[in-house]
Image (cartoon, rainbow, N blue to C red; front, side, top):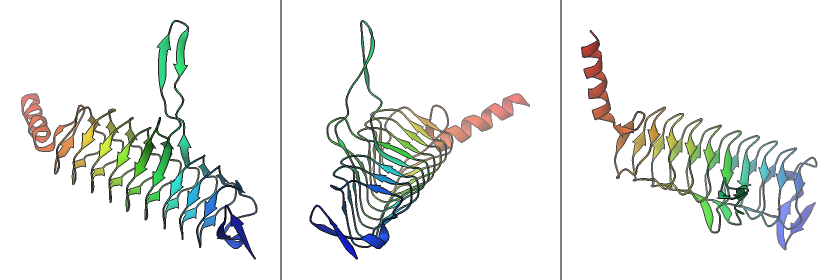
Length: 221
């Protein structure tokens, strides 16, 4: 048996009866939706994608072909944006989208926020480990690697082939050039050019950081 959503065919066998899929969602051929997953309004999921148990995909998210979304992940949450007024903080609505391009893999329990007006985008071929937070308006290039417990603040731009090692934090509005690596437990507060290697808190060029560490060890003797 086959069903149609918004005029586009989808295989009933790929959608668990324990999943909730909004009638306006469009699922490509070969999509698999696991139990206890929610797929919201106007969501589009490309061919041969897999959504694991307990995932939430909120309104207007778009997933490309061969995308994998790990268990417990939430796509399309509201961005963390507030304005301060006389009576406290006022929430700024976020009405943009999340775009996940082809061949992206997202690990378990990640959160990716929708943009304020335009889009948060994850480039084709990028692989994201578990427990990663990607804030509103972020743009991540193609074939990036983002390892567990990274936090990427709003409007960050990552080029292609960037590697963020575990527990890296990146400040808002920072750009990371193509082919760069930010090593584990680093805090990046400023933009860095292509082919960079940075580490530390605050992050500095990796070789300079190693020299500084060696100097401190010599002084401690």
